[in-house]
Image 1 (cartoon, rainbow, N blue to C red):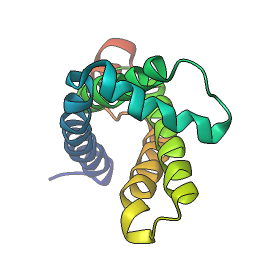
Image 2: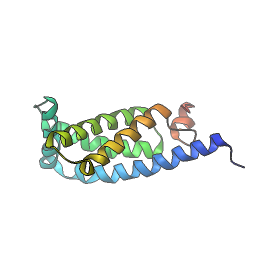
Image 3: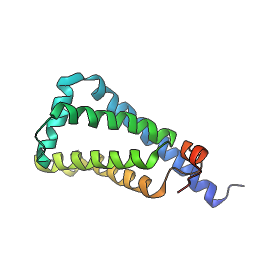
Length: 138
């Protein structure tokens, strides 16, 4: 019979894999978009007063979503990945607020932000590479 603790870890596993794969495939087209796409994505940093190197920032955002999604799914270096993805979602929310978008438009970024903060707090769980190699549950 499954214990409550095992069910919590199973829930974390399902959440990590589902969100991780979704973000991997969300970021992959951005990575493959090349410098023109990265410049468009990176120009969002101007909302935060960062107006230099938009191509660099766009690449970093696309890389964070792609690699971060993979790391989430694996449960490897979960907290650093969740922290970087949290920053990504803060920038995405800033962009949506600045544009005056409705809740229906920015809700995905808000939901992802909440998930990444929660995963940062909870850790990867025992069904993860973090636990296997670093013996870190929380």
